[in-house]
Length: 386
Image (cartoon, rainbow, N blue to C red):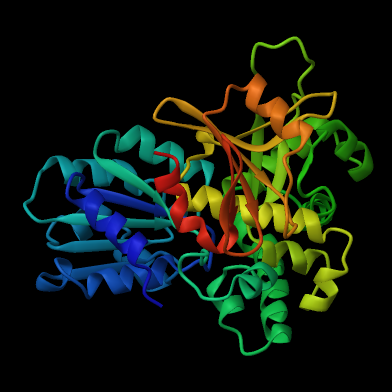
């Protein structure tokens, strides 16, 4: 499947930087996108060389990376680079030689080492782009996307049973093979047990100490596990926003699974009827809708917050655009109403506008500064923020 937004973003970054670092979870389509880019302008006019660091042959070719890379021209793709973080200083040397027309497309399943090495070695030389699994603007069928999630092999599976068989295998492979490749010595069994626990607190504020007591581990261990799942794009920790008001505000982060298919796999939800009657259906749809909003607006992690007070007022997503504050509230109902919580958020946070994300395709006003936007019309959001 063609992914025009991501392809255009990579090409735009290459106009300014000689290195583009494309990160994202395993099996989200990074390699496919790289192959597509290599076959399109302007890259198809020159040589393309690809190294897959999961291949023993390619690892052997890069045993002396300066010797292997120095003579190459055109587009150079290095896949699964987190397996050889020592390549980054070599890339800096090659980039600084300023060979005309040479571009590096670096692919990696995000890890702390990957981000640290690139920031230290390629500062000012590299652009960073996150590729997610399929998003709402790339596929037709939001209900299917909500149930199966956006990983290409789950989305494209012939049946729902095939999709969830793949998702179950993905979880097992991630724990047994991928986590150790990130340099972590976390026990796969312990991490899987925590992952299951997190599925049952999806969309809630997270108390790491309570999770630790239930898991049988200390606060620091649980924090390390959650950070690992965050760095690998499995979960999103939404940090609280604080404002100078007299009300007591919630300080713990909220946790969401970034892919609804993985959440449903861990909850053993395998069909739409099962999902519709599941006690976590509302929380699942909230996380799915919020992820769609974040992707539509291209928000970075440090631009996304939630807000809540101990008296009950809350806002699912708070961000700023052009220096002005905006809020988003998710309501899985056909006819959302203006609530006291929304009024409190408008007043306390001095929101420019508040958007209520609901099922369907309608856009209409609830209030002078409150607009309902149907999930299938999210492409209108960027214009509505102006």
